[in-house]
Image 1 (cartoon, rainbow, N blue to C red):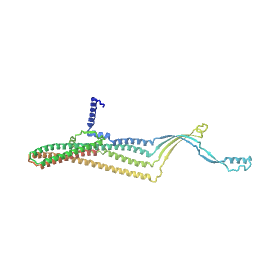
Image 2 (cartoon, rainbow, N blue to C red; image 1 turned 90 degrees about the vertical axis):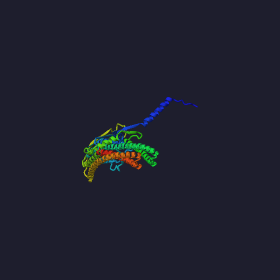
Image 3 (cartoon, rainbow, N blue to C red; image 1 turned 120 degrees about the vertical axis):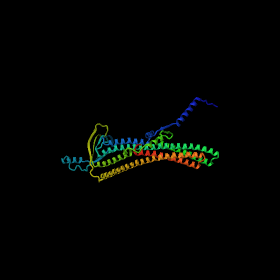
Image 4 (cartoon, one colour; image 1 turned 60 degrees about the vertical axis):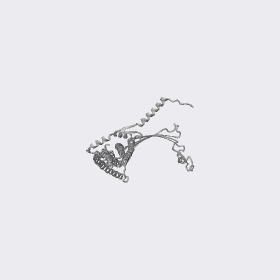
Length: 467
């Protein structure tokens, strides 16, 4: 049997490469601050890429509309071969006339021509027809064309507002997802600390139980509480993973990419606690939706203008030059040569009566203008309400957080005292259990208060158009 010769150095090198590849995959990660996450999302957002393509398409649409008012020039070449040329039946009017003259001059006796006249086929179209032509046209004046140019430019601006609107939505969504992960991780840290403290208490309680000073029920209660905390911790792991996947989806980032969030939520909360509600006057133009509504209003006004321009006449000019070669034998130079034709002209279209169609169109367009004005005012009121409501929620969230902090501090102190009393035998397990539950409830209340404060601040930024 053949033996396989091994190369130790090559094997070591291959193993090292595999290890390095594995390590690079495992530790491939991206560190992101909130601003960096937003920038990343904007750069890789597919909807924004579609918006950008729409913007380029809109620019070309403007060029297309403008081109209709620029002189148009076309050239053409045609060739026809009549293998059965058209003919017309023609009565022989020459023979009767000649016989009549001759009979009148006595050169022929009267009655020599007895008729009727013969009918023969006569063709006017040569078999070969070759024609080359050059045509030009120019729209000199058309009121609808002028309005169409204005509308096309506004349409380009409208596409731009769609991009700005998408950017605002991306900023808002990424901000919320980013903060949700930070808050979930703080909650996880709290639960892990609770597990650590409760594990220590459980170990101490087991020792006390061995000495016979407490019942086994107390140990079982703590053990059950510890298992409940561990279950909550595992659920939080899944929640964090799910939240990170949501953020990756919004960033358009591969799901196997590891992300590290570098923002400090504690510092953010401390900053928000110091922030006042004294804000500058709300500038509604920061909202992308407002610009979108304004452009829509302008487009509807242009629609009215377009229908009114329909009463104006339109003027266009044209020119044409051609040469044709008509021969029975295409290459017989003894037949007629090229025959030129050229002309210029002007068309004037004057609308006189359309049965009231334009009037009805103008009235409908004016109704659309009024509807947009109402929608614009409703949007303004809605945004003012959104800003006002966000400020109230932010103020309430600050108060709730302050109260939650005090409640958490108090419940932790009570729990510490209950633990001491329980260990010294002067407190009951029921009292300790109630104090423990109060701490967990206070922690949950505190986390909710932080979440509400951060969310309220995000809602203010969204309402003000700062995101």
